[in-house]
Length: 314
Image 1 (cartoon, rainbow, N blue to C red):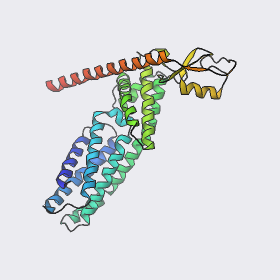
Image 2: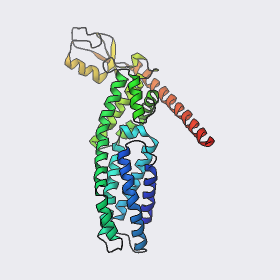
Image 3: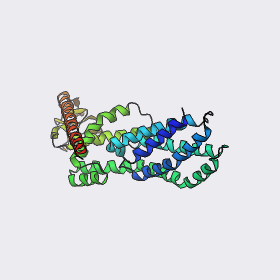
Image 4: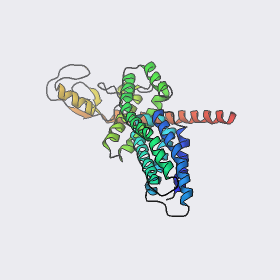
């Protein structure tokens, strides 16, 4: 743990802020804070010389390292940034807190730069507040964005979905769908390890959106979709009274509301509803998802090749 390492991490954070196109308000505030703090910390490091680093350095370095990882992920995967803000907001908030604490620590020291540190804390007070506010707003905006995408895909409004993708710098409707489908496995894996309830809700919403994207892709057969939710089924069950297949949770909920009515035909039946798993369809859906994931990966590889070629020609 060293101040030199912390300064290097600050440089990395500052540089990566330039590469991120999403949530610019928060990122610009962070970049300003880092840009002001970095020379102050460097001056403090030089003045400290070979003396022992203060107690707040390890926490600062850990927070900066996690923040840099989060920013790299944001730069590499803007869709994840938009749909799973908890993957980075908490880490940036922690970095914000540790930077402020470090400034206050320097201000209370006997170092020659302590006066400068006190002035800096005062100057950046509003930036610290604004950064906190924008990180909070990113989580709120996530809910609205997911709802808009879900409604656009459910209604088949590709023009609306393309507008949403364009406004959020996420490509066009087809590219957005491919990215959403490709991200489901990653979200499922993260969901196994996340303990924070807010992050779990975001991941579950992102997974549902990925399934909706897969269900509305032109390559998805209609019988892969639940007749109630219109989403790609994960656990298909047959209502034997009508012969139609539904997502298990969706048909169970529908039968609680109307226990003697088949949702798809709206016809009544006698006796207790009988549900049996549709193993054949489930296998076909899983195979289709694998094929779509491969197609998405191939499309991404082609896009990467085109980008590399453009860079080489530039």
